[in-house]
Image 1 (tube, one colour):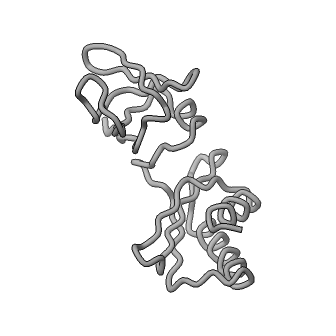
Image 2 (cartoon, rainbow, N blue to C red; image 1 turned 90 degrees about the horizontal axis):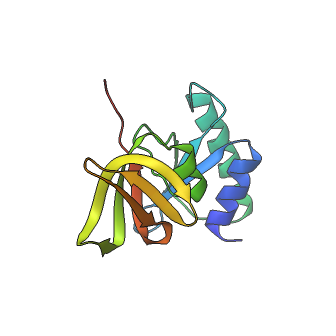
Length: 146
């Protein structure tokens, strides 16, 4: 079983959402970002400890070699990867970087309108654009501080 499948299975099995995984260049540090969509206060220290303890045991059984395991909440500027997340966070500000430029641009920032038929809608200052979901390299929420 590959590491991403192992992480997804374990984290989801504990009742959390696997948001993202980062590996250090040599794979010695594994950073796992989790969320609890149904919990208003979000991820807390106990959640991180629970996932960390379980993953440590699973890695031992599966002979996954690592030096450091870090479990964290995704933060206010969380990455948005899954198609369902582009629906879930509609109405929030987002920053998107494309793989291939559209109209000479790779970077967009605006209000997320959602995801439909393989396209992500974005409201910019002057107009709305639709971006191909498969062309999105990175996407992050941009927190609003009013």
